[in-house]
Image (cartoon, rainbow, N blue to C red; front, top):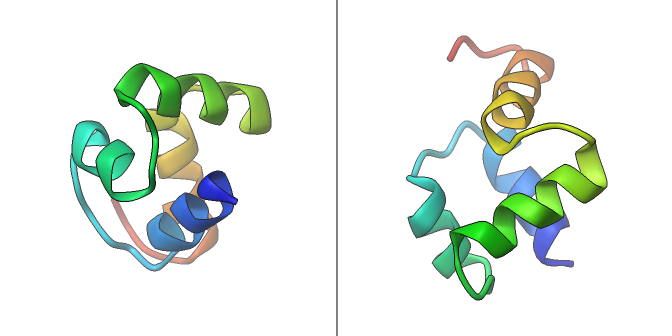
Length: 60
């Protein structure tokens, strides 16, 4: 559920550091967020963000 909310937030073009996003979406810390992103998307958080922004039709 945390990951889905994070994805929706990023697709909407919202910003924030990974630390801020981890706190906002209920992750223990930035590393916890990074592990979830890697597990569910197969890539790094930064690459996942870029792909989501591209899919949403926005430029980074």
